[in-house]
Amino acid sequence: MDAGGVTAQVWSSGHRNPLGIAFDAQGRLWTHEMGPQGGDELNLIERSSNYGWPLVSNGDHYGGAPIPDHDTRPDLNAPEAWWTPVIAPAGFIIYSGTAFPYFRGHGFIGGLASQALIRVEFDGVQAREAERYAMGQRIREVEQGPDGAIWVLEDGAGARLLKLTPKSPRRSK
Figure (tube, rainbow, N blue to C red):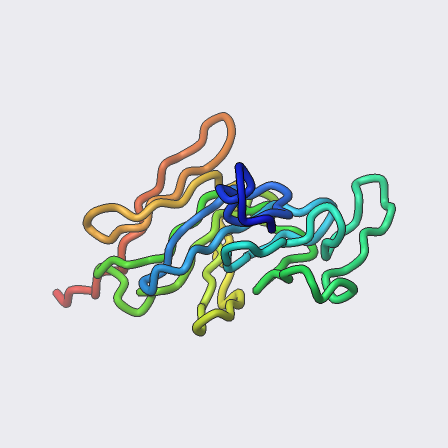
């Protein structure tokens, strides 16, 4: 990117529809984007990088016309993780609480189309889907509470706000 004028203020380009943004414990910026027909993305955002939209995607146009895949343009930044079929990502956190110590540093993405909470594991600058928790409803938002609970908001009429906490051990009688 040009380093002068207004373009000096642009951090990155080539994003289609970023809906979730979070920093990890190392200060790295991650976003997820809703792709076209296929190709939802999770990206590590780096200054001056171009993430390819509308030149490349791991999905196709809604009318079915193909879009070249990311590997056809190595000069553009490919996603660290992507989904086809889509999850239709919504809210996003990178967990930093104490209620679920085994999830510290993991990402959680709400899935509209997948009707799931998607857990993402990071390994430095790499990411992968680790688990998918079926919720039976479209998930619009994910947040971390001050007590470390994970809050999940469903989408649509009759939507619920769910507080996820660790399972308590059974007490003997």
